[in-house]
Amino acid sequence: MKLMVSALVLGGVLAGCALLNPPPSFTSENTPTNSPSEAQQAPPPAPYSQTAPTPGAPAPALPEQQAPQQQEFTLGPAATALVGDAHTQEQSHNFGLAAENLERALSIEPRNPLVWIELGRENILAGNPSQAYGMGRKALYLASGDSHAQASAWQLIAASLRAQGRNDEAYTAEEKAVALDPN
Image (cartoon, rainbow, N blue to C red; front, side, top):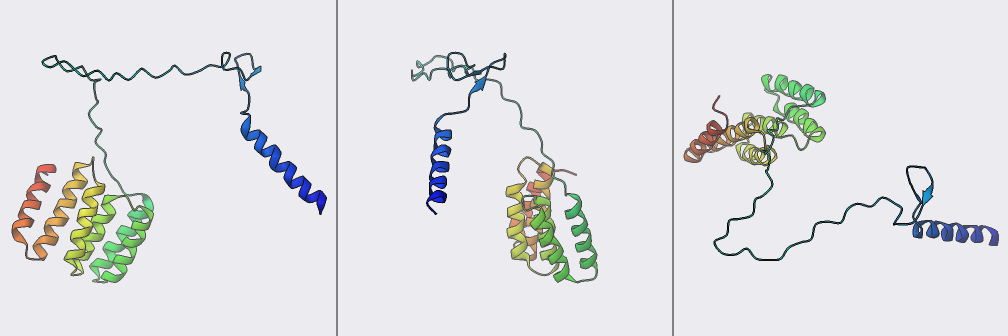
């Protein structure tokens, strides 16, 4: 028993020592070195200037920023199959099974706005426009960078508002959809 406790203590001490001394770095000649002067170091960051700009002076030039890339969401193969099954179930007016398939697709791709749009569309067909409205808002939040997905989310929001009798708000949502994707 003493031997086992001693072995555990020794193992812990050795593990602690290994953490204290970093492994040696290697130079191009593959010889270990622990000296900071020999090891290649990153250049220090540029100093931070706290001087205030003089009034009337032109603003300092900022580095050119690239325009954000347009992101386009698509469904993966598993989610595509589940959405197809849901559409089949919707045609048979079996909204419960359609919702189950879409919720499975949502568990596979929870950050894909297209799945949220499909589930919201199904909720409108099933007579749950207030739930569809929330799903449209979630899809709109997730769809940043994809104007087509944003337009589809606004269309879902408009349909859910219209189903609730909120026609003025629905019209505004439809205008936003058309502004994002005129097709």
